[in-house]
Image (cartoon, rainbow, N blue to C red; front, side, top):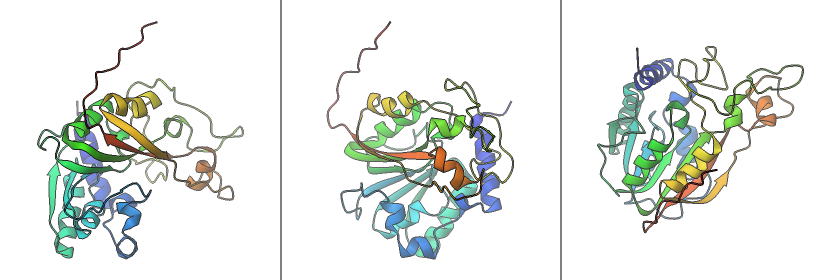
Length: 264
């Protein structure tokens, strides 16, 4: 039986070949306003020139190249060889150096400890069964005081129906979901077809960060809702159900004892 890792690697290879929007390198729009990718929420409070930046699960020739053009010492990690090929090509075209690493976000053993000043991860934790190993690995490779800026699909976004019913967008998946979510049709604007996706609870997404050694400094919900959009479209559904959120976390500079679990 094929593993989740191999399934999603193959799925993203195929999405890259199809040139879906999430697998398109930086273009005129991004080069014209690089801060939209480099610092969309205004959370990077230092000049990235000369800093070590990890673009995690961010293959596709966008994040890594823009950070490199800004002067960062950039590494990009992704599970998909085809997505990473886009980074190599874009870096070559722009004349910048990007270190390309094929690895899963929950196993960064190839990377050194306490190395990165900034880790940036776009929406991607939904492709692993558990988010805690991701956080542990990010904590290991982030320097004390370093920033970890990540984005995640909201639980309700993955619980709700994709199409509007007479009573609205209904919850069809349990909050305590076990295993991968049901597949979506090809061409879905709300989820990536062909991939295995997993829902993570709020205590895992936010509490897990704290337990891994980060301090949460801010959160943000990008607004994509459009009340006038066609029913069942991305914009209309986002008017009722926010699709994802971003979180700014800082690696603790000193170790603290792990909290005791409350047993009831």
